[in-house]
Length: 503
Ligand code: F6P
Image: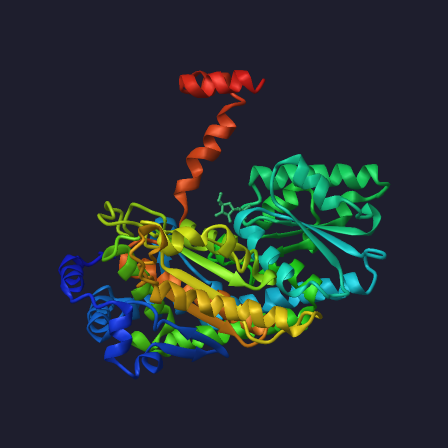
């Protein structure tokens, strides 16, 4: 696979006129209609970005040259799209939208998940009331987000997600849980991740100390390395596998989502898959700027390459989506934070911008100062839910939504003042995403949109979004601390810090 040289295309885009947002709106009455899309029940608005007809045409030509359609077809066909690991990326098959044999396999694995949950509900493990989900990174962030967003009023199993090696995290995760009524779900694609294995061992001790006679009989493994889970001592009847082609940060649809299904029920899990599948079908068929993953990537790429933005920020105007920024940080930064191209040459351009964000309106009173008046240009994404579902007076929800929309307007309009401290330059871009309600279907579709947007960005940038070699060195260094020879090789600063920390 050879990445095309897009330098001439970037030159074209860079040389296009740069009207302000106000000028773009003034010059085209139909702008909102042209730059908004409704897909899978979700409303997306890119009209407050600097994309215009000339820019879109140039980006479409670039996507063609980058062979987006062929790369997309390869993804959906289950072909190798991760050459450094010689693997396909089969997360779309988990939603039934991949190659037939991958879809079949995923369906059979889902059936096993469902049978397992039925068995738990049928009392196969005694009276289970809670689940301790142990995993890290992609083996935790997706389930944590979904359960936190959708499970707040659930009367099913209480699920706690434990990821960090910090014992404080362990104490907090098991606080108030009865070990005799807890099922431990160990989630790890490789089943070698130190944090997860150590937390799992500690969870076994916690169960034994809590009087559980057969602690190993309370363990479930969700993994792409079933042999390793069995080697660890988990009976193969409680090992729920998923495919090697499912990357950690793309895995919540697989058995990694067992805890989601336990917290929300199987029907909700299936709705989440169906929402994602609806997004898949859109992305697979829609061409050029009609494809929202590609359109989003055009805006993302424009700000990185033409306006030299180093970060992008997203703000969820809904407490239930407070974990969305962390989820997206992994998805975008672990996928596209790379300086090698997919054909293993220097990337020769900036990698993905830094993803950061928070929740509104809190963030308005903390970081929005910089967004409105700082010297950095930061494209902002607002995500809000139209229908209120909390129990308090409706003015709270109206204020919440109103603030989300007003911020986008304020960033764009700015306000002139001769007093520099009070001057807002305006012309600052934002995207708005409105979900009608917060339901498994919509959240499934939203997450699938982000996955496809990440892929579209990778195709244009020319990198492989499905490997993550950048995390290995730190892991190896941490391991080398146990070995005197490895310690000896460390730099003077780290050696001194180790001594100071008593390690
Ligand atoms: O260290 C990074 C990483 O490999 C992520 O890519 C992954 O999601 C996480 O660690 C957990 O890995 P595993 O599921 O194999 O335990």
